[in-house]
Length: 217
Image 1 (cartoon, rainbow, N blue to C red):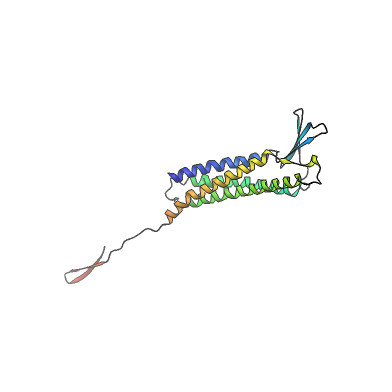
Image 2 (cartoon, rainbow, N blue to C red):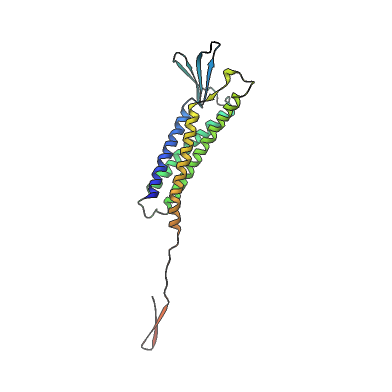
């Protein structure tokens, strides 16, 4: 019962983390900049995401533009794109493995294969979280370096967007949920691999009509 509860908890955490990956990937708020004029009044706010950039005017109007060329983007943005997409696809694979392992709960013939499937699902979710964590931390490091660069103009400096916080939270949920799924089935794998003890008795000889008959008990 305890392992079943851990599996359910791990599934909830991993599904929530995968949804967080989708939110972080779609929202255009990885890098946020505020343009400040001479009168110290914010006239427009720029949002930069993985796929598009948006400009929010002080009047509330927002204009978004999809990036024209992928090859013209910075290296860190291209890497963040690739890592986030791979993380999303791995999340789908992990959920498929977790569902397949959950279906083996009441199957006695597949009792030995369920721990392996669930451990594979847990490892997939952990890899998914690590890839997203690398993408988010790489982007955050670039933002910090540009912010403290004295040669960069004030209007070109960026700050952390909400997508980065979504990414950090989602990566933590994925890693924690994947670890719980792996640990919940490790005990089952050890129990299934434990050898069974077989007791053998000696050979008893019985003499019947001058002939020896040996019975194996």
